[in-house]
Length: 232
Ligand code: FPP
Image (cartoon, rainbow, N blue to C red; front, side, top):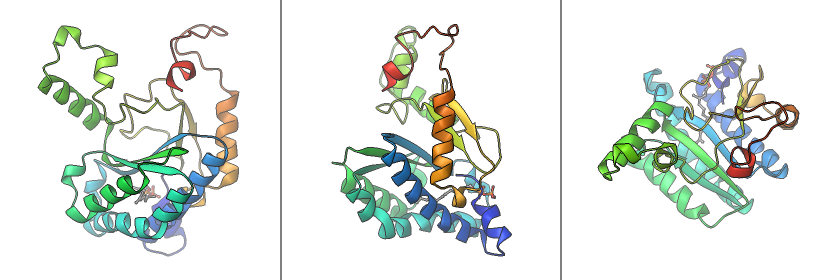
């Protein structure tokens, strides 16, 4: 969800107001994607690298979590959204952890769409924590294969993403879902996240629909064991 800071700066506002507007854009986007039948969304809300931002911005982003929950949790729950936090939550303050715990508990029974909020998340962190947990479980190194390691990743029970959307004009992954994005289609847009609207949702989905997914095979040949068939 890139471009919050620029959106605010362009208007002479503090960057944090851009992040606040980013929350509004997220709520709108969840509704729009849900209406289009998307069943799983994962958003990058705070990366393991974001700790290096100025302290007021970091603490502002942290306090946005309980604030956003107060403002939107009930409405999201009514829409059938199940919310989950993914990342190294152990490093967060009790207040933020509690807000995420309540968010998960409150929406656990919802099934229409799952919104994973990646927070203190990094793709490399995820691979390392998955390896650590597999080793702690006593998995035999010879028996460790992709399927087994996947089960230890933070999104183990979630289908791999079919589509990555990055706003704000950057064309890189920035340590997001490195393992899970292996076959994702990638949509990059100049749009700043707070301005992301229904038209952008339509554009992203039209882009996705225009792609021929091959999962490493030849044009026109779709291996049955990969991709949408296997990943839902
Ligand atoms: C990147 O834009 C955005 C972030 C680091 C934060 C994204 C967070 C939210 C939208 C809030 C989500 C919060 C909850 C509780 C789910 P940037 O600051 O790098 O923008 P810039 O590239 O214009 O500087």
